[in-house]
Amino acid sequence: EPEVTQTPSHQVTQMGQEVILRCVPISNHLYFYWYRQILGQKVEFLVSFYNNEISEKSEIFDDQFSVERPDGSNFTLKIRSTKLEDSAMYFCASSETRPSYEQYFGPGTRLTVT
Amino acid sequence: AQKVTQAQTEISVVEKEDVTLDCVYETRDTTYYLFWYKQPPSGELVFLIRRNSFDEQNEISGRYSWNFQKSTSSFNFTITASQVVDSAVYFCALSSPKNAGNMLTFGGGTRLMVKP
Image (cartoon, rainbow over all chains, first blue to last red; front, side, top):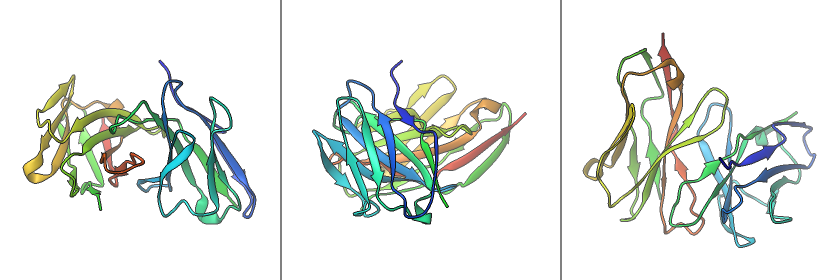
């Protein structure tokens, strides 16, 4: 069964460093998403991406964040200058189409900023 | 603005008991979609069900059942004859076609612990 994959599973970085989180969505899906979950808290929407552009972003997704689909398979989230409060689990998701089809999530990348 | 509330932060049951996880939502949209996801201890988010706002028929899938009531803005999830493997955090979520980006709004989650 097709699934969303994410690398790395765990990333440790120092404050101020740039990180890139990688995702490979399900191949026939058209919509891609990033969510984050701070430890023990709810899952929060960051950004959605369709047709090579951002369709919606939350207020969390400030200028420090960017997304890209550099080729036909990968979808990346870049944090330019990490802060301690960026420590969280980052989930990538994809969905086949709209309206509001179910989103399938990857296993997550745990980002630890020290 | 949309909001999802899961008032039960933690529930503990003994194996074989039935358990109901509550979900109450708020939205001004007339068309919307409701979801349940399971997050086992391994951390991934597993899709369980999607429901359209115009379909109030209850659904059963094995030991799982869902009760959608628009009159009370609730979408509750019942596990019958719970098993230890059901131990997880369960999230209810909401989305609306009016959101350009199809974002999911999650509730705070309910941690279910099933003891043998």
